[in-house]
Image 1 (tube, rainbow, N blue to C red):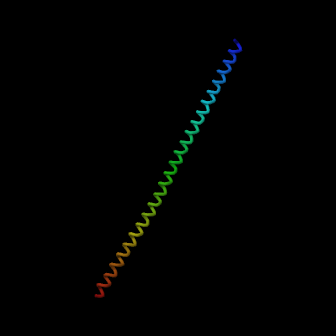
Image 2 (tube, helix red, strand yellow):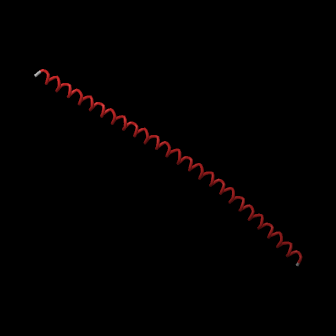
Image 3 (cartoon, rainbow, N blue to C red):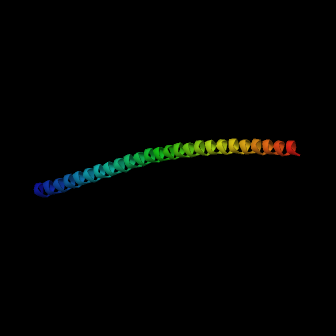
Length: 91
């Protein structure tokens, strides 16, 4: 009877150790997944910030082009008005 009891205790100990190892492995995997998710979120934030900066740069460039085009239009309008006055003076 004592041999059977020792065998049963040994089996229970092995099962408990196996359960602890599995639980530890699951926790480890869950922790790794959590860290990967946090890293992915940080990468996502960085990506959105980079996109925002790029969009701002493009908007500033477009604004500069629009300002330049408006200035060129104003200059062309002045030239047209000057030529018109010249024509009126000749007539």
